[in-house]
Length: 330
Image 1 (spheres, helix red, strand yellow):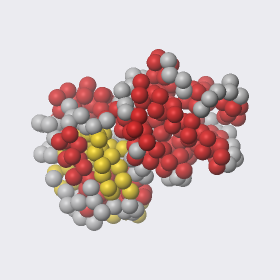
Image 2 (cartoon, rainbow, N blue to C red; image 1 turned 90 degrees about the vertical axis):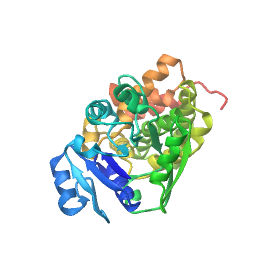
Image 3 (cartoon, helix red, strand yellow; image 1 turned 30 degrees about the vertical axis):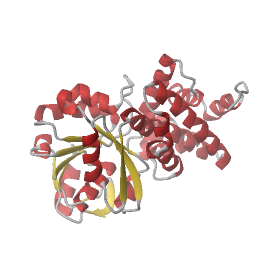
Image 4 (cartoon, rainbow, N blue to C red; image 1 turned 135 degrees about the horizontal axis):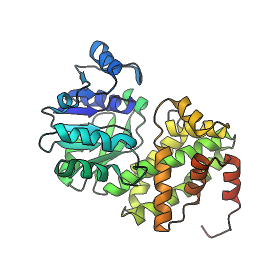
């Protein structure tokens, strides 16, 4: 297939590597000229994914119109904060209804909308049947072809299956689902908890602490997910527990590293600057907390993380408040 990948960060580049390996004609779009030049000259992205060269031919461009011209599939791998902006530009140049796969993981901070909902608003008919991709898929590990699995979800079964076929290979096993809300919310909310897991590490707490946070955090994910129309069982699968395990444990996780920096006493601005790439858990925490409040959902971990991130509350004080809540049945 002719596939356009928007954009060429570490995740978009890793997906581009896989798509080329699968025999597709791939064009990566990036708004950064040095990334485009590197891909064209050296068939690699030394800025965001150094050390991994494309095995076959790959095109790169700074023109979105050129990237999507004739594309049978468009894969979006852009941060949640700019999905609406990128989709607005995409709407001007996209023809027909190619297979649309959103590989980003986050919620729109101000509205709380899932990415497929943002794309449906921005792209209208072309956004219908958007496929969401989520799972334990750290970009560097996917690039080095370490075996893993993921799930693709769409309200249109034929499109979900088409995405499954597009992405399946010897090192990525792809399942499909009809629970778009569950897959997107699982992929988004686990980033919030990964910041909390990183704070635990930064404060010097042990595995007991992280296990407790992740377990009770999963309860919050399921509460909020069900209230927003997701299926509970989805959170026990790849987009839920699977992605949660990877993101809360791996030092490759941007969100974990942001949390670790916060636990060591850095400010949010300093922590984000140290990571040097977007940590989706930060804006998603704001969206998740606001959704929980508006829906009357009990989410104490999300609430305390929101206070640490946006209100300057000391991390240790947040932990103390969580530990001293009224005792209750599990």
